[in-house]
Image (cartoon, rainbow, N blue to C red; front, top):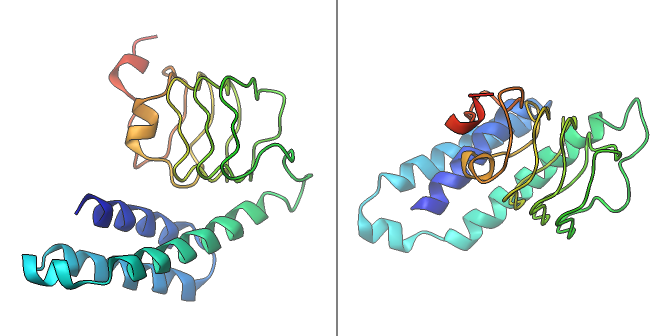
Length: 174
């Protein structure tokens, strides 16, 4: 059930972020389908093709991510080559790197230093942000950022996050 709700969360963001009306419609339809499954009885829930649903959601999220990230490459150079899906960037100081439009899906960012960075258009789906330094960073237009990711990171009252995510209470006091 948790996975269904997570997929729906991501799809609703994808629907808002895509520039393509057909993709927005597809995201909405997938989200609606997941919502109806989530309200089904146990027998129906156990009979769904969960793997097929995950594959469809994954493909759509990757397409929207590529579309949004691509818009950040239009007026500037591509992000550094060390910034890629699944990258091990634990403890790395990334403040001098261009992060806008980077694909950091599933990246290991434990304890990384992103203070003051602009992460607009950065895909953070499944990125591990435990202990990541986000003070004064702008994540307001980052892709697929969740509350648990923010809750596990370090930031301050000047850290900007998407509207659907809240600053942790301990970040508001400085």
